[in-house]
Image (cartoon, rainbow, N blue to C red):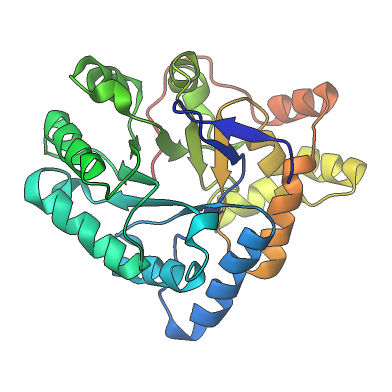
Amino acid sequence: MASKQVIFPDGQALPAIGQGTWYMGERSSDTAAETRALQYGLDLGLSLIDTAEMYADGGAESVVGRAIRGRRDEVFLVSKVYPQNAGGQKTLTACENSLRRLQTDYLDLYLLHWRGGIPLSDTITAMEKLRQAGKIKRWGVSNLDVADMGELWSLPGGDACMTDQVLYHLASRGIEYDLLPWCQERRVPVMAYCPLAQAGKLRNGLMDNPAVQHIAGELGVTAAQVLLAWAIRRPGVIAIPKAGSEAHVKENAQALDIELGQAQLDALDHAFPAPQRKTHLDIV
């Protein structure tokens, strides 16, 4: 097991790279390969698997359920609830549906997927009911900016939030201005989704960037591994790239052992400068 880990407020330690499942479960023809990739990730020690009821309308959760069958005790299982289901009986029903698809009786972490119209106080109440019932061990949020986190923290029980999962990669560094320091001060891990950026021009631009390519050549690694090593360079950040194939999963796991030197970090800062002012939270 690689030594780079993130510690949750309750003492739970996890590798700083997990397995994402966005866009999984959309085609039955891909199910076997997706299942094998997740299982291979577990073999390599990538114990955190992140999914959501939104992904392929529950299809991704079903793939995860297949992958973890007989291996539940090896997995730190994360799923997310739609904002319209994040209060009252809807939360309990949504969680039960996720558990059924995942073929398990509890989640290690359950997240509000993004903020909607239901008051945060109602979400806290629903999450605590699930925790007391043993359906979830922890709860957290996703796509909440620093003002939302401050509001959450001001509410009774809000400081039980265990994480904030947000978009974070080399070309999207807005959280470094205020949200990331806020979370680090409170020892709340940040989960970085899309740490390689999404598919398309932006992703290609990151992978093909001369600074990224030069560093990859220096270290004898891939551009994707440079980007992952960059994303987890600070304490308290977990990157959750998609675990799309066994080859990609192996590549992801190896990034845990890559250390970027100061000159390399400076070169990446020059190519993609850190924010100097508050920006809106990027969401995809």
